[in-house]
Length: 273
Picture 1: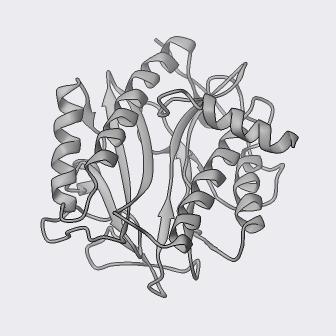
Picture 2: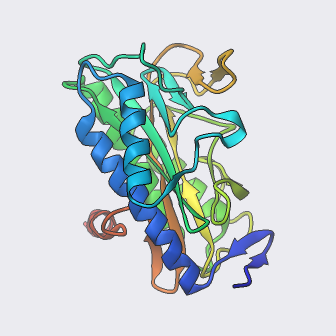
């Protein structure tokens, strides 16, 4: 089936979006399994093995494994690690840690991509707020992903919410992206910026939106492994991501088990009060 492009962005048919939903559901369910597995004493390599087994057992292929040489199924980024952490048997989770788990899967040639940040045991109120702010900012960005909007309307919605919640570092240089027959496609979606810029969103476009928020500075450093990105001040970071499709009825979150119904209802209630 032919794939169209507008403004360099792949536009999917309704049938192709359904295939992406299949991939997205597999990613969402894999992350649910991983969330339940996170506990003090488990290694990030253990989590990676759980993820690969779940994806392959359910008819998918891990998107990340082998991608530009990445050696694992998930990115497992602990505490001051922002993104792209490589799972390791030596990285054992401890009570009070937080871990970002980024996961992708391919089903019938179509990709899903999503990330969650999970507390390990009991975490501090400061960290709990960091996770809440980051996840809620994601949903503000997703809610702005409607047909007729501009690309940076999503960026602005993310930044505006984070700024309203306190002094946080919003990571620059990394962000969301187009997705479909490849995991990373045009365009890049920053997590900050003015509204009203970039391509107009159209029905059938699909994007992965992923804010990364730090307790301290926004500045980052890539480690010598060529993958792991950390905060330069050593303070901790959170990361959430979902893949969604622009539809006539609004954003359809393909990696959320309920397609975003609960969160969009919550945001609507908050905005009307």
